Length: 124
Image (tube, rainbow, N blue to C red; front, top):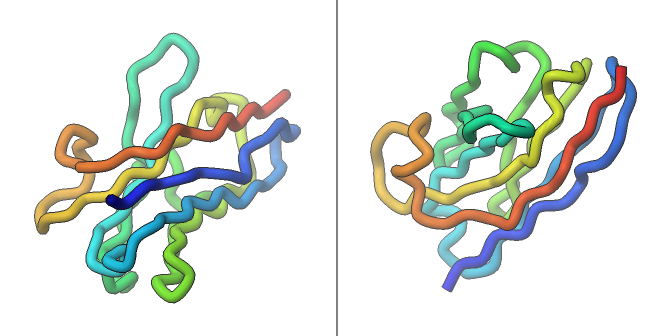
């Protein structure tokens, strides 16, 4: 049974940076595509970024392109989200998710496993 645990969230000022981590248990982590989603206060969950199992293909929401970078280290069973130049509108609970089968990575309902989330709060 694979489990996902996010960390790295916190309170930062606008323009600041954080590195979110998602540690996965289980030996087959490297086979999964991984995604990051976020849920701002009072809003629905939205796609942020995703990465294929090999790490050579990534996807980003338009709102974070150029500021966020997703990466993975399969040897450490960990996926990262480097978030730079944070804005108050980036305030949200950030979730990582794993997708076991091939297919598109933008739709949250297509993911199979979710972490518990980590809070990111950006002050202006």
